[in-house]
Length: 367
Ligand code: ADP
Ligand code: GN1
Ligand code: MG
Image (tube, rainbow, N blue to C red; front, side, top):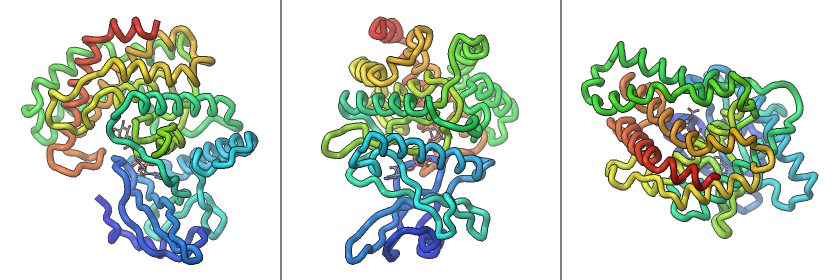
């Protein structure tokens, strides 16, 4: 994990056109991918914060294409907010701070790509859902984000990670690593491997429906976990959708599915006590209500009917990715303890089982 000492944050900060003197920089947030720092500057005697992020280019092979996407999405969102004459536009959508050369991102001497955002103060990305209203607000915000992306001008967005939510490809990758078992870890996860193998027949339900044209391709967020939307600390309103690295063509179903994965269980993604992991129906109901309040206008009947199944499938898909990363030796997701991916994959599969047992009730709710 990158610490503040890994990079010269003062020097990096000085290359962005922000107004103030560097005071300090600290690692920030609980994302699994990028290196994120909260930067404090002194602006005319007052403290002010920015977010400085290094893009993980081991994962995002085309960081410049990624940043072109992000800049377009930020501009589109800001233009929309300005046209609505919102007084708080800089809290409701991410705002990139340009470099002193007038670019949207910085390339450092090691080839790292850095970006700087206005810090959205007084709002939190929650790792665990506490109240049904948080689930409602998060789903409402991501639905509004999808609606906003429907009229994004310009060419097709770059696919920052090809086949990101192509569950059959994720499954094939799991099988490949399982056959190689490069770290001799398969023996440690026999029940989990059996769980995954038993669900092979379901992995292509959404991709095949898309291929047949039954489900439309849309510009989607693709990483709609609860902590990727900031909720206002006072009102709990879903304020600002963040983590735009994977905004690209996809299915609305996967966005809703990841909300089910991250906003219906009272347990953290890496909880060790699996008895705490469960899909709570009132949270699912709040997600449906929040999501349909903003996405209800454009979703097709087929998309609607698959919302509960999408929750199960994406929870399975992310569990499969944690399992694959465990077998491979923790090469993708950041870990903070040796068995972190093992703990994460177990919570995901426990949640899949919980969703499976409640699928009829979830489907009845949607109807
Ligand atoms: P990752 O891809 O590693 O998850 P994120 O873009 O989600 O990176 O950022 C990590 C964390 O930093 C977020 O979960 C959030 O808590 C915080 N964060 C990111 N951007 C901002 C911002 N503009 N204002 C406030 N907090 C932010
Ligand atoms: C990663 O970046 P972050 O932490 O918001 C991952 C998601 C996973 C998630 C699991 C680019 O999201 O796909 O669902 O971890 N992002 C990428 O918590 O792989
Ligand atoms: Mg994130």
